[in-house]
Amino acid sequence: MVKLLRDLAKSRGVSIQLVTHDPRVLDIADRIAAMEGGRINSANARDTAAGRLAGGD
Image (cartoon, rainbow, N blue to C red; front, side):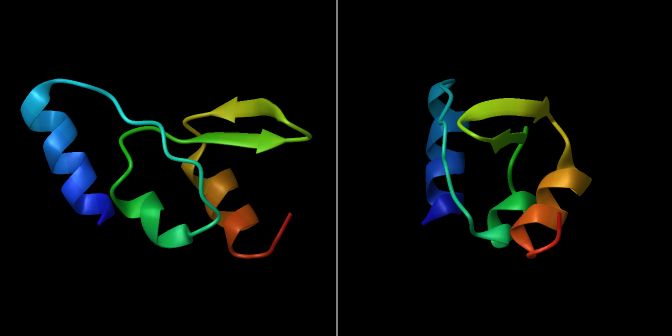
């Protein structure tokens, strides 16, 4: 389903913001923003987000 959304967004030239705790989305995301306490604390931090989604801090 996420790949379908990505393909649709690219074909229409629009953006999609997806909030998830599912680490499988990391592989297909163009950009990643990590949040903590309701605030973005790092943008495009793939390694940080991957660690948090995997259960590490």
